[in-house]
Every structure is written in structure tokens, then in C-alpha cells.
Amino acid sequence: MWLVFFKEMKELLRDRKSLFFMIALPIVVFPLLIGIAAYVGSQAIKDVETKTISYSVIGAEYAPDLVLKMEEIEQFERVELSTSFADDNAIKEHVKAGNVDFVLVIPDNYGADILSTGQITLRVFLNDSGLNMVNRRLTEITKEIAEVNQASAFMALQVNESQQVGLLEPIVIEKVNVADERENWGEKIGAFFPYIIFILCLQGAMLPASDLGAGEKERGTLETLLISPIERNKLVMGKFLTIAFAGVTSALITVVSMAIWGLVLSQGVGVEAVANFMAAIGAIDFILMFLMLVPVVAILASTLLSLSIYARSFKEAQGYMQPLVFIVIVPVLIAMMPGIQLKGIYAWIPLTNVALAIKELIKGTMDYMQLFAIFASTTLIAVALIGFCIYWFKQEKVLFR
Image 1 (cartoon, rainbow, N blue to C red):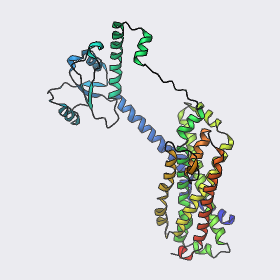
Image 2 (image 1 turned 120 degrees about the vertical axis):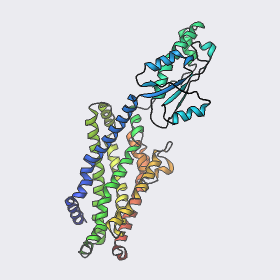
Image 3 (image 1 turned 30 degrees about the vertical axis):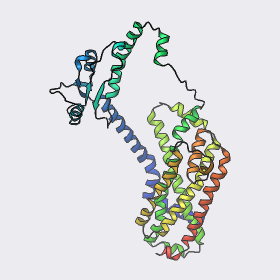
Image 4 (image 1 turned 90 degrees about the vertical axis):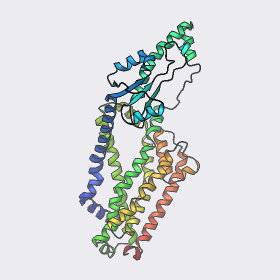
């Protein structure tokens, strides 16, 4: 078994394509793609924030102070209306045609005296399907005017400051979060960590699995390997260990490289908080995460090897393996759903239970009694799939189909 493992690893390390997907891609390409996406996203937001927005006002004569403040904003450009609109539909069509970015309709009850005007409703017609800053900018303007009007009304009613606070917010709910910093961070990122790890293990194992089964069929080297004085089960286990090693290595390299790039690019922002969070996770928790990944990787590796052995060609094997991505994603998505906890039946569902356990370990709220169900279910399935893989490899009709 180990002879086959070292032989396959030697061939794997000689293959530049495999090394690229296992090492170069995680270290350079993945972080680069994430960095490009983050840069493009930040530039898009920056462009929206600095974009000049054209607008028109209906009923400007009712609110000269509001119109004047809008004209003082550099990112706002007022467009005078050349026609009058009969109804709201005409205003909507005007905005849809792209004549202006938005139209502000000011009612005739607009005024500074809240006691006489009551609540004032400003209507804004705009295309809000994309990212824009119209609402935020208008809110900043109207809030300033509203606060002045509120203060005038309170003075007229002879309401003191404490009474003003009570009138504006009669009941206030003060939230006292009993969760510590580790639990808060774990709840935010704990659900995504197993998702990334599972997908990376699968992607990293796909190429070696395709090559060690279907690839050997295409090259004609499988027959030579079969006539060697090595038992079939040891032959399968050697290939299985190679695929599992490749998957784990690819995942670990990717996670480590993303962490290093994140620390480098952050330039010290939030590094202390992240460091404190990581330090709060004990060594036993990290060991348990790794141990729980062992049967998961065994499940993935044995499934991939079975599909590769069955396939007639490398291309056919890749086609069989692609749907596995969705099969792996679904259990992890279940673990991300609100209200799903590591209890009852969820502690026995493969992949879902491991994803929930990793999240709980990161948060520091793990119920270690659930480890029995997790290891029992995943190990049982892993052993069954490895047994099936050995049985599958002994079928001549599968090897030479």
C-alpha cells in the first residue's frame, strides 16, 4: 500500500499541472482573484459615491430651504422641468426614460411649523434597482431640517430636554450581549469556514483522482499495474491515500495563503482583533477540527476514486465528478440556515454535522458529547465507501469497460 502511495505521489509531484492546481493556484491565483474582486467592488462603490446625480423638483416653491440645500451639494445637478406631469405614471416614465436620476415631489403642506403641518411626506421617484446614494443624501438633508423644526415645536410647547427625549423615544430597548468576542466572531465566520474547506478538499482531490483511475486507463498503464504482485485492496488504498493527501494539502495551502495575504493587505487594520480571536481557539479545538476532516476527506476521496475507476476517459471522469460540488454544498448550506443546531438528527447527518461542529468549535460553544454521533456517522460512511471502492476495483467489467 505504501509502495503504491509513494509511487503515485512521486508521479503527482512530477506533473506540473497537478502542482499548479495544488500549490500555485491556492497561493497566487485564488488570493489574486479575491483581491481583484474586492478592488473592483470598492471602486464601484467609490464611483457611485462621487457620481453626479441629476434631479428635478416638483413643488419647489413650497420648500425653498430644502431646494437650496440640495443645490449646495456638488454631487447633485438640478434639471428644470420643461413640462408639467398629469399624474404619477408620467413622472415614472420621465425617470425611466433617463431624463433625470430622480424626481422629488414636495407636498403643499410643507412648512417649518410641525404643529400646523403635521407629518410631511416627500416622494422620490427613482430607479432603485441598482446601487445609488439618493436616499442617503436626501436623508442627510431632511434630517438636518427636521431637527430644527422639532426643536422649534418643542420650544413652542415648552417641553424640556428630558421630555423631548421621552416623546421621541417613549420606550428604549437596551441590548446586553452576553456572548464574548470569540462567540461573536465565530457566529459570523464559523459557518463559512467549513464551506470553504469542504470545497477546497474536493477541488484539490478531483484532478489526482481523475488521473489515478481514468487517466491510467487512457495511458494504458493500468494493466501493467494490475499484473504486479500487489493485492488489489492495497493498490486501491495507495491510490486512495494519494487522493486524500492531495485534497487536504490543497485546502490547507489555500487557507494559509489567504490568511497570510489578508494580514499583508490589511496593513495592520483589525489584525489585533483577529489575532485575539485566533488565540482564543484552543489547540484541542484545532485538533478536533482536523480529526473530523479525516473521515470527510475519506468520503470525498473514495467517491472520487470510484467514479474515476468507472469512467472510460479522463474527460468522462471530470463530467461525473462535477455534480459532487453541489452534493457537498447542500449539507453545508443546511448548516448555515438559522435555527439549525448540533442537536438531535443534525448531529448524525454527514457533512452537515461536521460543518456545525466546526462552527461550534470556533465559537467556543461545542457540546463535546456530540462528537460520538459525528465520528460514528462520518466514519461509518467513509469505511463503507472505501469498502465499495475496493470492491469496485476488483470488478473486471468496471476496469475494462
